[in-house]
Image 1 (tube, rainbow, N blue to C red):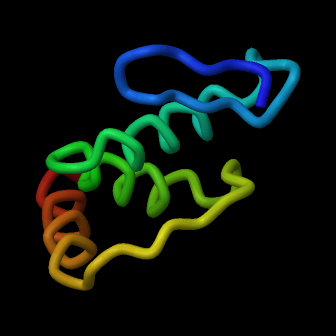
Image 2 (cartoon, rainbow, N blue to C red):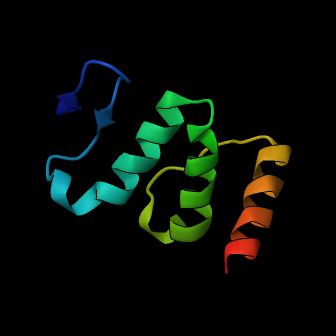
Length: 73
């Protein structure tokens, strides 16, 4: 861990933070919780190949995000 911010407990596991911004935003959303969890699910669905970690989310949230993503496309 090379970065710990006050506030939402943002953690970065990479020394070069410029190359892993998608994963950093994803981890921020997971850490914040609440409505940001839906953002984390959307990031994982759209950018899973760019993430080195995976989250465990409830099925209701996943279905909601999938429906929202289909409507917006």
